[in-house]
Length: 228
Image 1 (cartoon, rainbow, N blue to C red):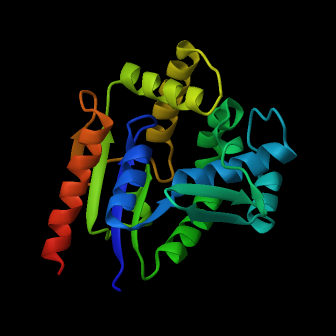
Image 2: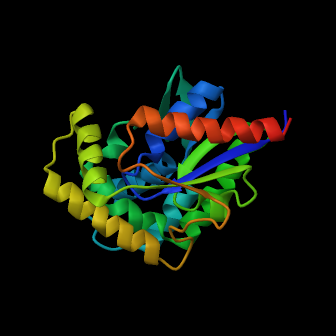
């Protein structure tokens, strides 16, 4: 089977993760959750440096050299394992959310992750999402989508997602976190959040999740026809 990559980029809370999972399931593609991989690396960092406010490169190198991150699909779910332990819920806590942008902006971390992500994708049909998938990780992806949505809408979606996982946080904190991540991710020097020039822009502000999924699935299916 020839490799076929669907790259979905966008800011936090834009709907890209939910859409990517659903499109992968509908098309029977492998779902490569790149954001979860960065969150797992962040969790490992925080296990060694609790309550960190800034990045310590010695700890970063230790994470790179002594960390195993594994994604396993179980039916419709993607389980995340860090050094053999299930951390699927642990990587979604506010502590990880507030520090993942700093860790994921480190060039050494990104280089390490890109190699892992490309290895996973080799010879597969995959759907993956993040902030630089279509520009850095898979610049030759057959399908590139960039998802956008208003800040308040994104915050409400993220809060709902956290509540469903029994993680309580108020809306104001979620808004502040998303604003910080937008600014940080867009302005970082290495692999910033950026639209690929050939990406299809999808504004999800006024779309239901089903409409988002249907639209992206349609885009992918049309491209698949052209490649067969």
